Length: 93
Image (tube, rainbow, N blue to C red; front, side, top):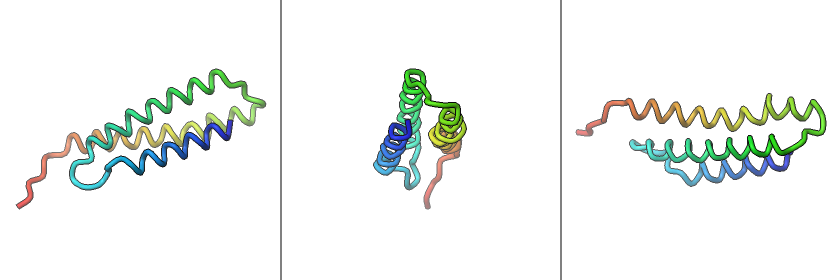
């Protein structure tokens, strides 16, 4: 379980580094990250449903610490997308 989760986190970190999240127009990057992280959450759900936890401690660790790491990133990029989408356009002089 830990190997799967660690490799997923590394993949997310690598992907985050390739997405343009700098400058004035970060909306496409936020949208792309939100879509990517939703796919990763679906993969994580499928893995959790098909994987038998070896004990209660592993299950607790997954739902208390591991899953929220990815969900938190998804919520961050979703909220950032909402904020940036509702921001008035800037006009440089």
